[in-house]
Picture 1: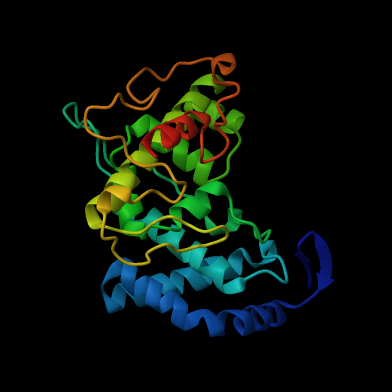
Picture 2 (picture 1 turned 135 degrees about the vertical axis):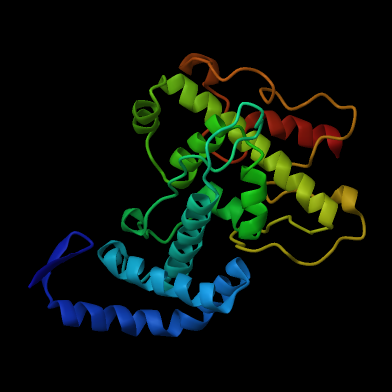
Length: 271
């Protein structure tokens, strides 16, 4: 049997491929189960989640890049498998008085779409500083439109054009919603960090910032260094306006990174 591995055809039987996968996966089993228990808080559900992760990981094994961190690759698949299952379990019809919406039509990326290039996106680095349940809580506060765009573009990695085509909107609208979703998400997570006294300032390359509680909660910042606006200050630009900006109005605002330009000025003012 000829299989594809990172774009290169290799003569490998299915049994050999499974054996190679298991050699890499078994050392990661304990880490996967620990994370599954944190996510589900239930031993049976945790075992099911690990099993689902192994199945999805094997299906997506051809996309794993040799030499990169296999355990990190698998824990990412597990985390997003949980998010996807959680979203489906919470799905319900949208109600007219439901301001925040529920996890409607979520489809957080499938394992077969994962790639492994050894580098994390800005969103990955940022979100890794928080526990999955904290991210879910913050995402639930976004409007359904912004939340879906963030999941599709920032987490799933779809192109602006693909998201626009799927949602039937203009690219400028996608870019606007994504920009505002990032800004609002950072505010929500910053608020959560402050309320719980987390020290969340990440050094370069850090994947976890839960370093304990700070004696001065007001000094706590988000992983990107963007503190929550103080009471009485004007809201960050773009949070409360409409979503239908055109492409030209978004140029130069750094929307592709987690640190947008408007925040750098605010950080200086608050120091």
